[in-house]
Amino acid sequence: MATQQLQHCAQVKPDLRVGFVLMDQFTLVPVAGLVDSLRFAADKSFRSQQVFCQWDWMTLDDLPISASCGMPVSPTKPLNLWAQYDYIVLAGGLLDQTRNPPSWLLDALRDVHAANIPIIALCSGSFVLGKAGLLEGRRCAVHFTLRDEFKERFPQATAVIDKSYVDDRGIITCPGGTAIDLAASLIRRHCGAVRAQKGLEYLLVEERNEAQENATSDGVYHNDRVQRAIAFMRANLDVALSLKAVAEAVGTHPRQLHREFVANTQEPPANYWRKLRLDHARRLLVNTSLNITSIALASGFSDASHFILWFRKQYGETPYSFRKRRHEVERFDWHGEPVGGDPDL
Picture 1 (cartoon, rainbow, N blue to C red):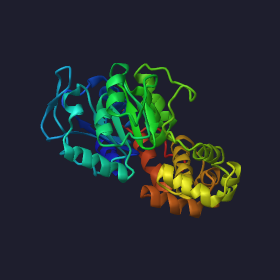
Picture 2 (tube, rainbow, N blue to C red; picture 1 turned 60 degrees about the horizontal axis):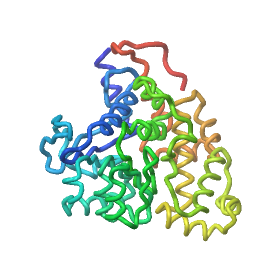
Picture 3 (cartoon, rainbow, N blue to C red; picture 1 turned 90 degrees about the vertical axis):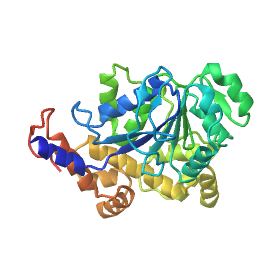
């Protein structure tokens, strides 16, 4: 049975893939908090199998590296920022390397950001993003002990010292700490509320409500109209409204809304809204027993066929396949033995 379980696991496309780039003398605690949260969300039981979440360890020179506490870490993969990661995590620590990062790394991070791959900077990793010019006009969460130097080096960025993390248009900064709040939001977005709660419970962390969290789902956009449009979209995920209705709700015209969306989110409002709908649908597939047609309608699609078409384009598989493979994995208990009957698909 264990072999059968492993075969099912191998078939599942992960919901969340993270590439960790560890810099010399990185701070261990935020990295550990982030990856342990992923570990608990990664499978049905507690075997630390990378099923629903996957992660790799990389270093700048593909050689072992030490954390600031002296603990050595060996990379699991050669450095490759283009391996279909949902997030690239740049883990900084002591300032020696983050103050003066190699120029090729700055170029690579600019390319990653231009490709709309979100970047997470832990601890002093924000200094590297600042040096790459990726924080200009953005809010950035920094440790209070680094605020003065950060402001002097990067005056075009807004230093924030009272947040556990800030997500500003695809650039996520975390000043240190455990990074568990950040991890929970990422897991909730990509894997569903159940898996996020699982990690919080086993890490003995009390769940924070939405008002307490720094929402990573929409980022922080300087354009108030774009923020209001996104809020309207989220409030109407189950209604097949037109973009004209969105534009009217925020007091503008569709053409102007399109220009502002592209300037702030790097994509048209129609694409952004569709991704919100698909993300909502994926959470319903994971966390409910609703059938495909009901989920399609609850996510604002006109019918199941339309929903299935866009879901396959976005995620590379049908909604049925997405749910079936996960339920097959979850039919096995900690020992690899089947539990319960077939899932109701």
